[in-house]
Image 1: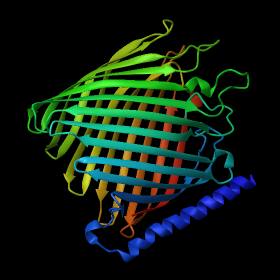
Image 2: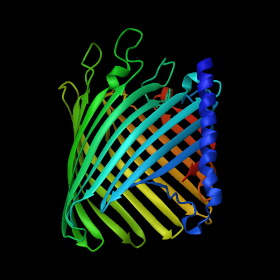
Image 3: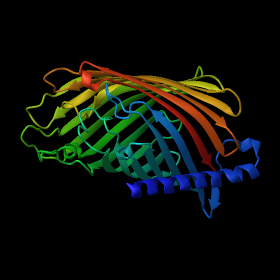
Length: 414
């Protein structure tokens, strides 16, 4: 316990020191044209972008329980550094970030996450390009945050994940037709609570490899509008072999979508796709299913300083309850700049989760509302406050909960 307290104290001291170090250059530099926009620090052919966040939260239901709730104050320190380089039309970047959360009075809920991400984009000609991404994450799931897991776990579930992805495109910017091919691999492994008290797999059941392959063909019908035809396949390979009371959930998802994408038409840009999705399980004892799904994102900008983002989506998802789920999402976000320094973000989302493969049907509905106020204190330092409200209902009462989170934050970036 003393070691944990000493670690939290050292991290807090480092947070305050790094935040003040980042804020000092902002006082000496005053360029209104760059106000509020990090410019980075040149380092040979590379530009370095240091950044740090310090957030204080008050959470009235840290375990997401329907009753007997537990509240705590949380201090979150999140420094990161991004390196970016450009060679002609090609761009390369790498970002390393760390996040440490310290819960007052509930040290068992403390966590430290970190991640390293790299991107490379090549533009070979006016007709072809390639983007590659690699990422390594060490993360956690809060106790009670994942339905059907974490019962009796004394600490957050910890995991590590490695992913690789790429998108290759062929077709000029204004060409009649254009095609994009994408592929990706994700390997996720849990690091604690692998077995339950009886010696059966617990978190070990959640280890899996995902392999994705897809292609999208765009056909221009107007200068700013394109039709699209998309096919994507994702293979889910669970690493835990079958055992008594458990059947491996290996499966293949396939999506066939048609849609339209447009730019700057009547102050809106967006993409909408609709089609069929199908999930086929490797195990013949599990029921396959198919349904109509859709994905849509629209940005509406009625004013230069005010815009709205709308999201709709329905499709299959992996789940820790039953064999899988069908998720329906709806959301809206309003971004508004009240002045050159003061801005706000108001967001609402609704998630409906229909679990598959259960003897008794279960449907969860989650409504969330978030408000964030930002004030650009100096050129490189931003302060603000936020509020997040969550209300989850379910025909399984043990899955329901309500939660309020209040926060204040300080962000410093060069």
